[in-house]
Amino acid sequence: MLRLTKKADYGLMALKYLAEHPDSVSVSAKDIADTYGIPAQLLAKVLQRLTKVGLLRSHAGMNGGYELSREARTISAFEVIHAIDGPLFITSCTKGSKSCDLEPNCTIKEPLARVNDSIAGVLKSISIHDMADYELPSGRGAEPHPLVSLTRT
Amino acid sequence: MLRLTKKADYGLMALKYLAEHPDSVSVSAKDIADTYGIPAQLLAKVLQRLTKVGLLRSHAGMNGGYELSREARTISAFEVIHAIDGPLFITSCTKGSKSCDLEPNCTIKEPLARVNDSIAGVLKSISIHDMADYELPSGRGAEPHPLVSLTRT
DNA sequence: TTGAACTGCGACAAAATCAGTCCTATACTG
DNA sequence: CAGTATAGGACTGATTTTGTCGCAGTTCAA
Ligand code: FES
Ligand code: FES
Image (cartoon, rainbow over all chains, first blue to last red; front, side, top):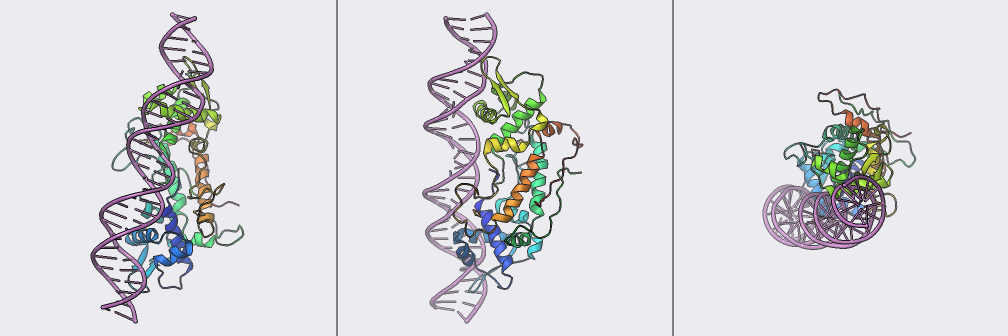
């Protein structure tokens, strides 16, 4: 539980890959799938969704593929996960449209919403570029990330 | 995805309930289940697990039930979730025993481990007592929670 | 001492979600 | 036109989550 789906995993891996290969004009889903040994068709779908939300630009035909539509530094892990897995709700109830059945009694919705926001904040503070940076073998990780406050004013 | 299981939800609700009723010596699973309209047997199991890890003390027999074994202030949401849903791993691979099949190629494990730690930190910084406090109708939420740094020294 | 009201487990069934495949259509290149 | 790629819908199988049932053990009080 509290786990990323594999699709989100794949998506992050792919974006990281793209961020690390700025030279290549565009990379096909198959290329990425092969280098990581993940199902090509599945990755394709993930990339398609990322394209639809505007994180990637796609190009069909021979030598086609995908490329980042923005700088890796400006793409947050949150955006990626949100695009692939939908809105982030730590609670079982998706406070939006259809409320969960124990809505009236649930006493933890409020407090957990704060936790939810904090987690979203953490995810938002990490960019694809950051992830690529962490490649460095030893434990010195790029520049420090901003602090995240649990309280919302 | 990235969602708490209902069991964890139930567990948190129950603990919050117990924290708010310090007067009652012990409360039965059925009592709590009834007040919140959740499946009694399922809640019972959740409480049993919480008992096994030492967060609750149980008492069988008539007028039996559960009570907090520690002060609400010292029980973190993290402990509860961990007890109910097992170790918190945001990545698909549970870096412990059996590694996931794309271990050798996976490039995002490291960076995501940091995110994982941050989230754990957020969860650890919230106590059952804090959750109970958020009951206040308007938006002034108890005292501020500590800041959580994304970087680990 | 008997029975009601509990906890404590294990096994199981039902439901929901996720992962992955297949198939077809469409777009671009040369 | 042939080949390679994206786009996307439908569908199946695997896995996880949620919930139920049944039974054994414990405590209390009439
Ligand atoms: S779990 Fe849905 S309202 Fe709390
Ligand atoms: S998802 Fe398992 S090693 Fe990265």
